[in-house]
Every structure is written in C-alpha cells, then in structure tokens.
Image (tube, rainbow, N blue to C red; front, side, top):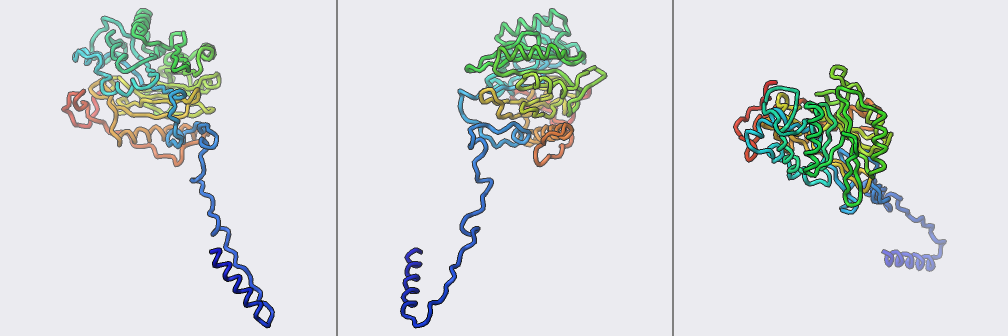
Length: 408
C-alpha cells in the first residue's frame, strides 16, 4: 500500500510540474475512526481477578453463576464440606440394624463427602450402646453406638451437637456421644469448647448454638465467636434454628424457635464469624451474602427417615472453598433419601431443579432484605413430584418405581 501511495504521489507531482495551469486542489479522504479502531469489547477485557490478582467480591450472582476460576494452589485452597441433618435413629437405626450394616446410610455418598479438607455435620441424635431399635414414629431420638463407624466412613471431622434432640437421653446421652466421637477422632461443636482443625497451617474454629425450643444466648454467641477468633484464622458458626418445612428462614412461635435466623446470622457476622451454617428446617433454604460473608440458612436432610414428603427427602451438600481465609466459591450437590435412611445424589435434571429452587429462594430473601439478587431472577420451580421409595441397586433393594411418598 505504501509503495502504491508513493507512486500515485510521484505521478501527481509530475503531472503538476508538466501542466501549464495551476495545480488542482486535492482533498485527502480520511476513514472514519470506527473503521480504523474497533469499539472496545467488554467481554474481551481482563476480569477483576486477572487485573488485581484478587478474587471478586462474594455475591449471589458469583456463587450461583461463577466466573472466577479458583487457582489450583494447594498451599492456599481449603475446602469445607457441610451436610444437612444426620439422624441415625428411629427407622434409620432399624433398617441399618436389620441389614447388619452401620455404613449403609452413607455408602452412596461417602466417596464424595470424605474428599474435602474438613467435613462438618450436624448429628441430631445421641449415640450409645443399647439404643432401642424401633421404626415407630417417636420424636425421642437415639442411634446405636456402632453408627459412629458410618460417620468415620463418610469422613466426618467435626460433629455439631447443638440441636434440639441431643438431650433426648439426658446428660448421660450427651456425654456418651461426645466421648464416642472423640474416641473415633472427631471433634465436636456446640458443647462449649471451640473445635479447631488445622489444615496445612490454616486453623478453622467451629462453634454451635441451638435455637429450637430456646432462645439463642446472644452474650454466649458473641463471647464464643471472640474465643474462636483468638484460636483460629477462620471462624465457622453453626445454628439449629428456624421454622420447619419452609423455604425461607423465619421464626416459629409454636415450637418455639423465637429467634429470627436472619437477625442472628447478621449478628454472628457482625461479631466476627466468617461463615454461618444453618440446619433444622428439614428443607434446604436460600442463602445470603451479608457484608461479604456467606450465610446458609438450611441444608435440608441428609440421613433421615422423613419419607412422607419429597421436600423432606431432599437436601444439599455444600462445599465451601477458601483461598487463604477468604471464601471464594461455593457449590452444592442435591441428594434424595431412599429406603428410610440412605441419601443418593440426584440425576442431573433433578439436581438442576434443586439448585434453581435454592437460587430462587435466595433471590426472594434478597429482595425482602433489599440486597442484590442474581440476574435474571429464576422462577421458583413447582413442588417436586415424589420419587420411588426404594433406591436402585447396588445399595437399594430396587422394586418400587411408583412416584409416591410414604404416608406420614
């Protein structure tokens, strides 16, 4: 192009010199700027993480629709896995006893749950030798002492004991359970002392509080968080709270659960908690990002015998990924309970519906609290249709393919 332009210019000069008349005025043609320089493409720009080397601020959008790629750096990454309620009593205890298999409730999920740096569960029944074996509809829970082998098998590191069923067999049941768990290498939260787990030099501190049947002691909560902050780099607080069988966190004056979970969760964050874990409602609920910290209000059921509705047969296993002391990602896998006690991972379609339900519930809460939502906000899926009662082999007995829930 340059040679061509030069040649044209030379010929023009030659013509001008040989012409008797005055030279012609030539106006140069200038291409529009848009033809020369393309408009900036926002999608082609480096991300916040690439520009700064820091993960983006935590948000519902980033949690449910992540764009940040967590660096593969085992020196900085730690994972915390949390399940819904674990209740190895009543029908669960009956069927594992009939099978002579106390690992049975966890066989379909153990390979996954044991894979995190820390696995944290809520145990909603005392464990001791001589627990009555009966599937009867009692609300006095206990599990066989041999159930501890199932907890070991699924990789439990910390067991929360702050809930409304821990004291079903009094102080003796509490003491026996705490001692049994510790003998098998598990720490406990909810009895006062902070459970501290050191993961490659980073310390996680766990405390738990029950708010079902009693009000949460706010003075003890603030002091417990302060104590955990002295002992650990990351403070994890688990609560047993809220109204049962609801998608939104709320009080229940009938039980009672007198504390609003949102109020208590916000106080915990304000007082120094790094992540808040919730359980008890038996349905998984939405999440919240408050002051850059994650609040999970309920994970639903994990090992339980509530087969009378599809919602109570479902739960989510949350994996919370920390880069140093900062939570940078979260993911959830949905499970469905079969045969009165054994959770299995949902298929891809049902898992997607569960996560959409969780996202929609989170957006409903965010709108109520005037906080940022995801975009676009998904519609809340319809109530799920009941799945077959029996799991397929190898862990289930097969058989029923009728999508009906068991009677209450």
